Length: 237
Image 1: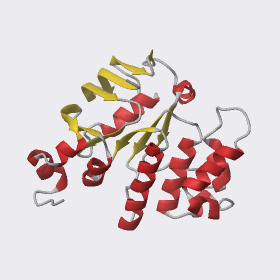
Image 2 (image 1 turned 90 degrees about the vertical axis):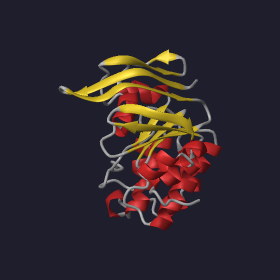
Image 3 (image 1 turned 180 degrees about the vertical axis):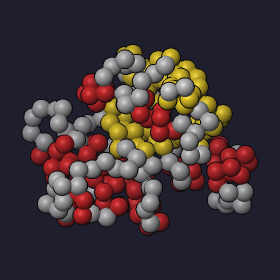
Image 4 (image 1 turned 180 degrees about the horizontal axis):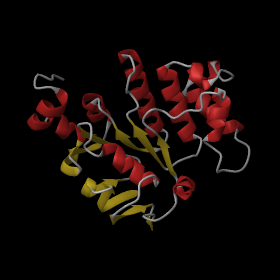
């Protein structure tokens, strides 16, 4: 198992954000976390990447206990994240934004840049443009491309389709599928549960900081309770 989250509890002050959450992500999978706003999905990603401390529980990555490992060392270990809100550097060019993703690595990144441009041709067209002048969809591509520059074993994606036009949403999900096909494991948090469940291999459903369901994604796509709560009662294939 590449990533194991074992019975973790996370607090914001006295408020319990995660209550005994356990999640497994095997190498080569796309696993998605779905649930309402405030269910704890983003907190799980932040805890994995070291941005939120654990209260109790353990996180194992590639066979190592990383529960107390600093965030920058988790990047070096192979955990990459494209955060909610994208977090690009608006006053830097597309190329420089991408290179920031490789800050912890050594060597020549020209091949890695070319791979990012091959995956995102739009970024190649705008390589000298300032990140802050790009559209929302282009900024999302840039955030994902920057995370991939760290050569992660697992890519954490937080709401990659948020605020995007439907045509761009389809494009982003196609890119995520291609990233996975090229060998990167993906843990996806996504409000668009329909698309996420169609893309993922397995899924977990969160409610108020707890896992309430876990199953193959296609199975949850057909689950009446999941369809009513997250896909709309009249959802169709």
